[in-house]
Length: 352
Image 1 (cartoon, rainbow, N blue to C red):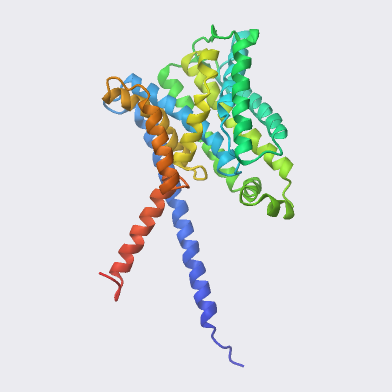
Image 2 (cartoon, rainbow, N blue to C red):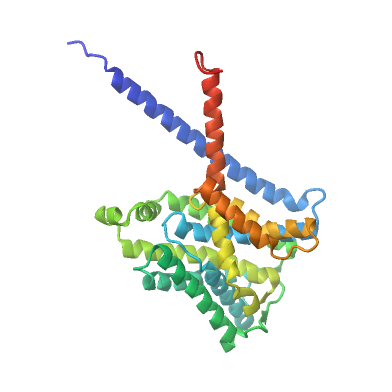
């Protein structure tokens, strides 16, 4: 008996193949963009015209990107709003500084210790804030940042405003200068980026995003809300804690005047939201914007005052209105829209 041809099935298969091809092409483009970005960053210090302060500024940008990556795990992929990640930055910084002062550890050991210390605090905080969400979660994390600032300012071991001075940075017994520190920071950023890329494509990442989209539906599907929310807090805190370690060794000094500043938490959230909280490239754009903005303003304006804070606020409001998913997602959507108009204009019978 001759089989009947099903045009609907053929159309469905064709549509699925087109969607799959588009996803594969998008994935390749993302990888190409990321590799090009890291290649440019690796070549940056040796480019003609690049001065020492530029490499130092680039190192600071890397730290902001990493801190924003930590926020994105919690806010973008798990849906939990945080305004307290400056506290995790301080935890990582002080953990490494105390180890360096009392035990003579190097930068590599500090990164590991600071990351684990921040993860432990993040785990405890996740359990404490288990029943909070939305604005209540934001207020709770803000309170945590104030708490950490108070502790490091008054605890004798943290030496308050006098702070702890750190020696020249070493990795595996080898002293590294500013350029060496830049490359160590870049490699660390590459590892955290790879970690987040693998995370969001794993079963754990899918559980995070299920909780973000609907906690009740996720729990009904077998996702353990307590476990995965606590895990998200721990991973998010660990990445920001590592950024804190790099920051401490970048300035070779930690004090409550530096790490008790609540505006770090605000800057990290602004960087995440402006760049895109659920986009891999989002923290890169947002971190660059937040970290480099004050330098650009000082370069063009003699008396900048609070202009940087004003511009950050305006940028945040603008992005939330025009591109709620972040600048990167907005640019991608714009180019897709422009490309669709171009294709429709070139199609026979289409508008011209």
